[in-house]
Image (cartoon, rainbow, N blue to C red; front, side):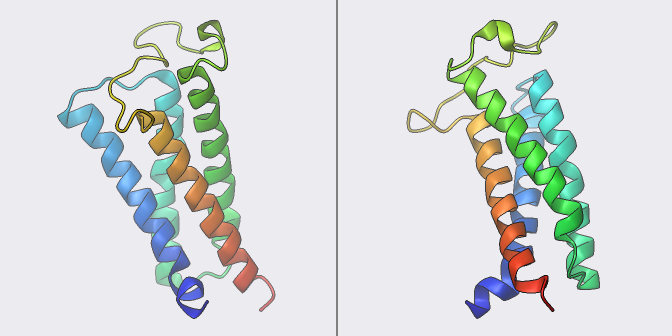
Length: 140
């Protein structure tokens, strides 16, 4: 458990950085236009890179207080996006009034790995990391 305790913030930061670069790769290199929900998820993910980096550099034991609200809100937004994408919710529930639809399928790796799935996975893992970090550091 010592390694988990020591590197939890680094893992969360690496996830946030990978998700940020991944979203920029899909929109700027591959040219997949982001939908409204993708933009909201970016709003919650991009600051996590900076917040977690500052938390690591300053050894802030309470960095989870700043990161967890963003990661949980992003996770819930990504969950909603996945429910729309996999047609659990009707497309009429999508907030996309103009531009690209939130249910547009750009790709599916292995039949289930999609952009909304990647986002949900990243936010969930970052949230778990923050909860683990909180558990190890809140009582000190």
